[in-house]
Image (cartoon, rainbow, N blue to C red; front, side):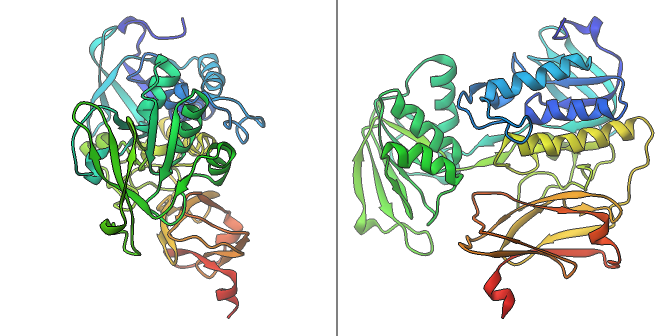
Length: 427
């Protein structure tokens, strides 16, 4: 039976319990089994595993994981097949109510009621949530028709409803860009996408394929400053912003619409990590993790968008594989490697994950730049390693592989990560 139906099929103790059955959770489960974890439990609050992938019916997933482009549901389905083949227990429609310091996991679901299992290790893979209107305090009326881009995606792709007939999109995050195209293809008039920043927040390929190809205008350095409408959105007021991102009201204009989609960023869903007492990174909003994706709580790991927001599901899966392997290894008695080097964001770098690494390990560092460099760029790891790339932009995550060979001979305990224009380094 693919999904655990009741408490009779649950173990009293698991080597690894994973919270969240999206791309991160499923990859972590596979990683744990590969490293010898015999009993692995995957828990998710939704009725079907797959997470946000299930509503992402567009292609663009899987190039790195499978070597070909697939849709979100196809990506999730392929991972789920592997998970079930590996005899991982999958409990859906279930909530994790609590995790104690000694990793007792309290579950609640219609099938098992309230039930507690012991875990040698825990992996947090809850993903991220969307920022809402309240997060940026848009003034004005409170009519219907204002929603996040992800909720609109759920309405259209899973429920079969259109959110409106004339839409404005605030923010150029990837979900907003993809929904601009989706709505336009369904016959909705997408008036425009308005972005506070001077550059798009989503991937370049999505700007081209979702906006340029459909002649949907993108207004940079522009934002919504007021919402109008009694029962339903009737119009929004938009205005350009100055260099400090403050609206210029005298240059504002009104745009008629019946729908406003918000694509204003994702936030790691780190409430469980916070309640456990794990240290959080104020730059990412997610837990601080080591090179094995272990949090500051021994035996508790985290991976994917709960740690930091990734561009691609492929990157989420790769990172979660590391977490699952480390959790499985620790549960079966492996030594925890010393994390003796701390990584800090340096020039033009917003954050770095992981936060610490082992000098004798191989790691993939993930980070984002603060400002774009449209030309040759040097990625610098302290004074011990440099790599040149064509360009960098804040919307696209940058990765750097670090091997023991690179770290050989380094005797310090802190390394800065910088992203600098090549011409500046040459001076």
